[in-house]
Amino acid sequence: MDLLWVLYSMLTVCMAINMEATGSHSMFTCEPITLRMCQGLTYNTTFMPNLLNHYDQQTAALAMEPFHPMVNLECSTEIRPFLCALYAPVCTEYGHVTLPCRRLCQRAKSDCYKLMDMFGVTWPDEMQCSRFPDCDESYPRAIDLLPSSDGTEESPSSVQRDYGFWCPRELKIEPDLGYSFMGVRDCSPPCPNMYFRKDELIFARYFIGVVSIVCLSATLFTFLTFLIDVGRFRYPERPIIFYAVCYMMVSLVFFLGFLLEDRVSCNAASSGRFRASTVTQGSHNKACTLLFMTLYFFTMAGSVWWVILTITWFLAAVPKWGSEAIEKKALLFHAVAWGVPGALTITLMAMNKIEGDSMSGVCFVGLYDLMALRWFLLVPLSLDVVVGVVLLLAGIAALNRVRMEIPLEKENQDKLVKFMIRIGVFSVLYLVPLLTVIGCYLYEQSHRAAWETTWVQERCREYHIPCPFKVEQTSRPDITLFLIKYLMMLVVGIPSVFWVGSKKTCFEWASFFNGHRRKDSTVHKSRQVLQEPDFTQLLLRDPNTPVVRKSRGTSTQGTSTHASSTHLAMLDEPPSASTSRAGSMRSKSSSFHGSLHRSRDGIRRTFF
Image (cartoon, rainbow, N blue to C red; front, side, top):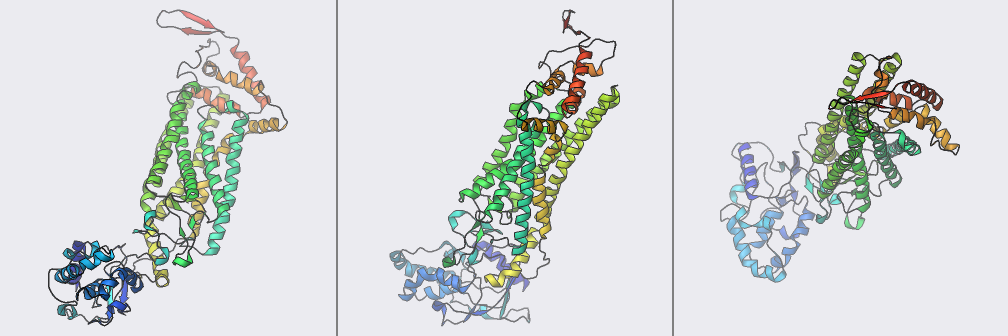
């Protein structure tokens, strides 16, 4: 019996008969032939699906309609048994599948060729005579009806075969749309979500809506704080603003999905065509495409801006680039931060990988397609995490080495430690949600096959499709996993509030609401002190040593890491403290003349 099954599998491959399979097993019993054309033959039972991918006799009957004129006009005595051999094959014992002889096919085709041409019927590729065994017997052959020689006791009334997943008629989609579901083309997942109950989906939708509002408010606050005082956030901290803008757009898309419910993410049902509501796929739905483009683009751009933030911190800490020197690379940063996500978005649109998310109401990628999940979500996000963490650790190590090796005043040492802690806390607040999202994607990827098999097993009789047989593992997803995933996708933008949240921000907002802007206020004065290239030397100098000044913006050594840390610390102080501190620093620095030694001519020049 096993040998017959192996031979059948090899024969099926050689004939190139299209049989979609996803690794599941199905069990079918022989059923009476209901096809009018195939009644009254030498056999009266068949099995479905047949070898032409018709999962029930009703579908097979529709596929046979073009051949009705040939059978009714009896263009050949062989045409009827040949067609029934393919559309309603005889049901025999397990593994014993019969095929019509090649000579039978050739005679039927040659006798009816002219009549077929008259009615405009073409001979299907899957019915080409070269695909059938080389013999000349009527169907079914006598040897096909004999019991197997291994003496098995299995009843000939049951058939067990590897059928895989067959797309239900209710989930079928027009071929030109390029849909795919569980490896089957022109098929789409059901809508609403196939894994969860209606009450669970309602709770999830409101949960995502509330979280999106909170995250939208937080990121919008960060962006507006930046607009109130654009000059406050200079490099290396400027990428935090673009990072916040990206996740502000992500939150906005999820909020729109909450308002739209499933009107965009799902195709409407069509009762007249026996079509159920299905998940939107591809780019034919313009609203879904727009939501996908915005959500995916800004999700990837947000992660890239975090990597750029770690790069700017690294440049400030290790080679000790100044703010002006880093800002000269801003064009390159923007090209990478917007260009890479743009290229990925265009690639996904060209590959038609857009999928509707009936739980959140948006359109994204990797919801049902594992390949897209791996290469367009897991790989880019994991790469961003690895690169960002390496640069972050290198920068923190450099700052710590400065703190340990170079003697600083206690006040400045405290500021440097505070800055290092601030970087660390901000990075943890970003990395924990992002790593959680990656973990959810990995878990979802590893359990997707079991979830789909369980769903098919529960719904196969309702959809009249093959039921899984000998299923090794069944499981259903926990909605908590999806809620955590959506929560972490949104809260990853909130750490930007931690960075801008300070007393200085409160004073700026208070001043803004009072109706006057402090263009030449103490904040600007403190910034002028911090922009002085010799502020670094002032921090590190010996009290009896004159300060060496450098020209602004001409050297990557313009501002050291120690000054950058103090800069950030001072910007977070209220105006009064900042003013007094800036004044004291100016009074100290004004007592010295800077000197610049030129190695070429040995001339010393002094600047005030």
